[in-house]
Length: 285
Image (cartoon, one colour):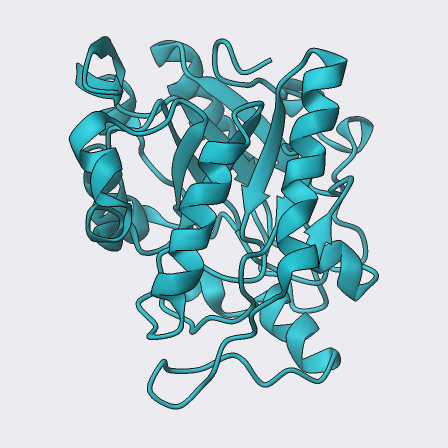
């Protein structure tokens, strides 16, 4: 979900010690850069921020480099993991707000391998991997995840900005054996019917080849309007429809923001009273 300006400085965008995104504790960007693939990308805040900070990293893989980072950057999540252990709680890490984890780019395989190892080194952190390219997930996760089961601290999500994106991406996401599968319906650009996936149930391998569960194909739905100077409006009834789908299926619903030009209206008191809902998947807290 990348619609409109969001952050004040480069450090916050690169590695968020305390993220401003309401549904996560931290953000970690293993790289910067991407290329637009769908209508939800039109007003990409990450691209705008990258250009403002002098980085030409948005464009096709054949012609555009991505920005990578050194050891100090990669050590940050290790500290977050230590802090979470000391606090006796789990903490969520959104990866990546300035990229797409599963972009097909020649620079990224080595960086992804480092990311997979980092995820396994930080079991007190739940890693939220959000993509607009779910068709790449199965081929890009490490082979040992495919053989032994995804680590239980890996949540896989896909962006759903309209019905076309839902119809294309959710069926692919539903095949991924992650412990938590989620949708980011932000920026929500039109009404979306999620009932084909929220109500369906099936068996999923979730850890080390020995544990299975039965449950919804989607565990969590995040909803939000677009923000920034060119924000496209979100009708509250579109959000209400998603809420109703989730409530009927027993799926967690998180209303992030209403969106808008001058004010994201992300605080609960700024939302219609019936949309002031911020739930997390069962066991996530």
